[in-house]
Every structure is written in structure tokens, then in C-alpha cells.
Image 1 (cartoon, one colour):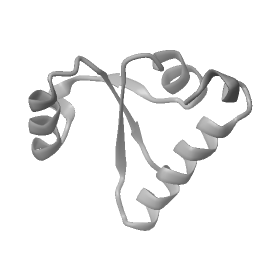
Image 2: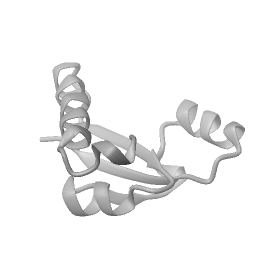
Image 3: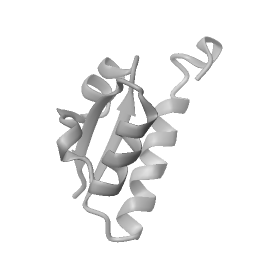
Length: 78
């Protein structure tokens, strides 16, 4: 997200919308991968730091193939 959009709530709205779509599909746990937004996911959205090993097998394989070193966060949906 561009810095000009920081502090306007767009990121929170986008993440909450994705969470709602997951709920509608019966998904009980979601993940977020980020290199720079740790405080955003943990502090503002209530996500917990997770491990790459917590990712579903197929997604973990994509993560490993990408070569990125993103942090993994997770949220258990209600």
C-alpha cells in the first residue's frame, strides 16, 4: 500500500473484507504473509505470529519456492 494511503483505514477494511469472505466459505483460520507490516497485523488486527510450518502444505510449498523471507501471521476466525 502506498504511504499516501497510510492511516486512512484502507488496509484494515481490505483485511476485514478478506476475513469475512473466508467466514462465508467456512474457513476458520486465515494467514497473512508480510515483510513490513508486523505491527499492523499483530497490533491493529489481532493476528498472532506463526511459523512457516503452520501454513497449509500447498501454500508452504509456494512460500518456499518464492525465496521470500516473509513473516507469517495467523488469525482464528470466530
